[in-house]
Length: 108
Image (cartoon, rainbow, N blue to C red; front, side, top):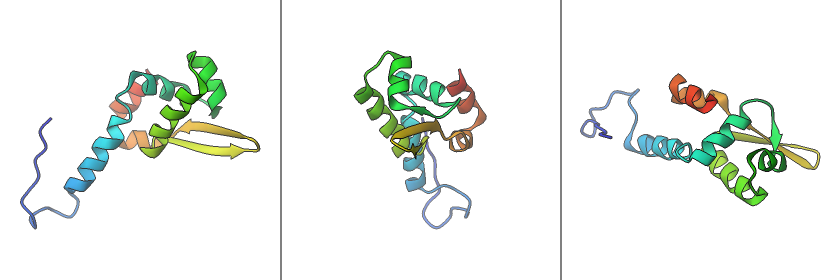
C-alpha cells in the first residue's frame, strides 16, 4: 500500500492527517483476522453474549473475549449490559464508514 500526503501546511481541511491514517490502519487491522471476521458475522444479527458466541464458534470464552476486546477497542463492536449479561453487537454504522465493500465482506 502506498500512502501519499502533501507537505506540511498544504493539506486541504478535509484531508486526513498522518495520525488519522494510522488510526484508520489500526481500526482496519482489527478486521484482518479470519477469526474476528467470523465473529463479526455473528454480531451482525442480534445482540449476543460472549458465552453464546463461544458456543456458536466452537471456541473458548477467553478467546472470544480477547477478540471482542480488540474489536471494541477499534470501535467495531458495541457492548451493553443487560442485568448480569453483557451483549455485543457489530457497530454497522462504523463499519459502513469504511465502505460498503468492507461491510459486504463482513456479512459474507
